[in-house]
Length: 284
Ligand SMILES: CCCCCC/C=C\CC(=O)SCCNC(=O)CCNC(=O)[C@H](O)C(C)(C)COP(=O)(O)OP(=O)(O)OC[C@H]1O[C@@H](n2cnc3c(N)ncnc32)[C@H](O)[C@@H]1OP(=O)(O)O
Image 1 (cartoon, rainbow, N blue to C red):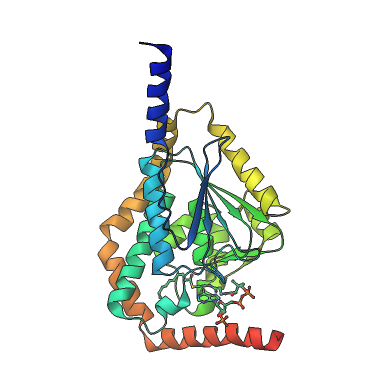
Image 2: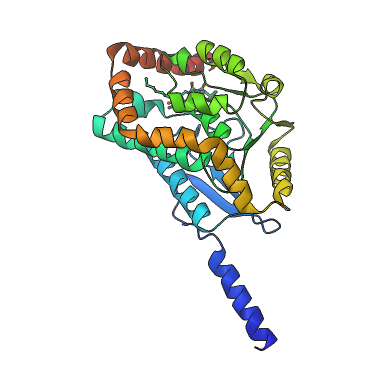
């Protein structure tokens, strides 16, 4: 075979392996780093990247594309300069339409299973606050770099809601049982340096550029590791948590719907929404 034909075939096979991303994402920016082929997925749903059905569906789609294209890795970050994501969109839980809520929760389960269980390595460049669902997304990643002076944690109890068992398992996979219990029961939000001290994040960064640089450096650790050995090892550690949710998926949706629609829980959410609005008014 002529050298030029060989090189053309090689180029073709490289092209067919490159991730093909939909340009139709409304709430995400997706870009591939030419130096290391790592994909950066940037959450872009102003003002606070709250996770509604649309955003979750797009994250789910991009994770499917990355798996199909055998991506060498993904960084999750935000286009905002102060919020990574404010967690689940409270409007999806406030006076929910049951059918819409089921779709929303199903999409959240999907994102969790795909991100927590991804065969490719993942890092979060947390360039802003990451409460509740935001902390969950960050903890699903294998490595977390966080810009200083922001907050992260599972603060559900502060809203009068209960973090589902798969949220709890994700925290248990990250920090100690003792710290998980204290953090969850008090709904604690950790400042960046406090999060580093308990191991909720792996590194601190001065700004987003520094966070992205450190997140990119994480992937160098796998240069000499066969991807299949890496992926099987991750699955041995995380796979049983995912299997548990797969088995209980419908039950988890029904239980969450019946809890979220309880009058006391709805009152708690209304109170919390009012606090968010008042905060704005008293700052003005
Ligand atoms: C029983 C059932 C089990 C359910 C289990 C549920 C599991 C997870 C739950 C969650 O993820 S609930 C969400 C928890 N999130 C929070 O507690 C964060 C709330 N937000 C904030 O603390 C702040 O907004 C911020 C993230 C620190 C950012 O502060 P900033 O000053 O920059 O912005 P704000 O002025 O506060 O907000 C702007 C705008 O966005 C609205 N908003 C904020 N967070 C959310 C949200 N999570 N969902 C929907 N909307 C949100 C906020 O009200 C403002 O709205 P406007 O006043 O501009 O209309």
